Image (tube, rainbow, N blue to C red; front, side, top):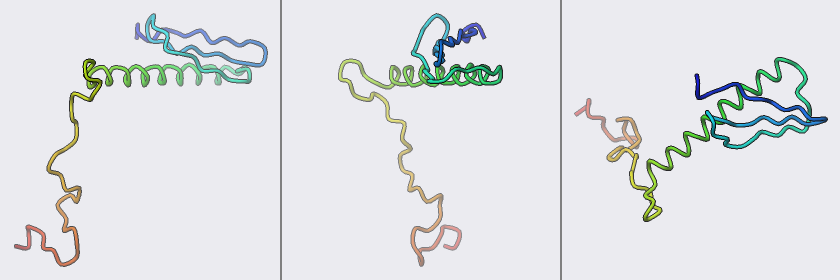
Length: 101
């Protein structure tokens, strides 16, 4: 868990600032317009901030892996081809399923 170090939540007057960090990289902050006073609130904010930071990093990594930097187009197609979306069931009444042939 070295990448997810303990974040320092700042409570200033009537606001709370929670940094979104992974390792030494800062991805942003969560700003609350009320102070987080209870220990449970602070713990929940830390968990939420860690999850948000990981989600942001995953989106950034996905974009780097799928976006062609030269053409700015998606380089990979992750769709399932040939799928009718019907899970093998007849698409309309009267159509026979393969098991009834």
